[in-house]
Length: 74
Image (cartoon, rainbow, N blue to C red; front, side):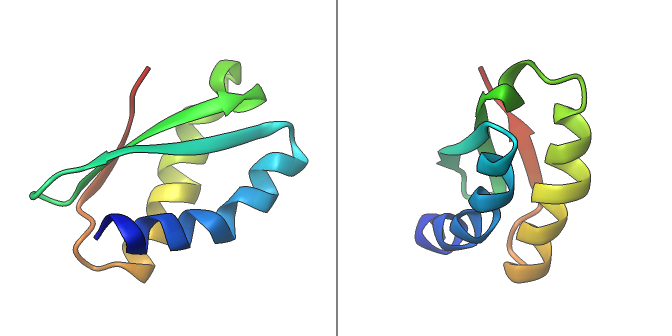
């Protein structure tokens, strides 16, 4: 499933990069929990949780039904 997640993240990255940020895949566990690290401007942005939940998580869940949750890690 990691490969699928990376493919979807590749479609999201241009939007994040346009604002000076990026996302890095840390892990995908067997329960469908995706762990991501927001980098660049996204790392310190006050809107990062909204980007993570309303943006990245929504897109990942729509593309990959096995994804249950997306979490940000340091």
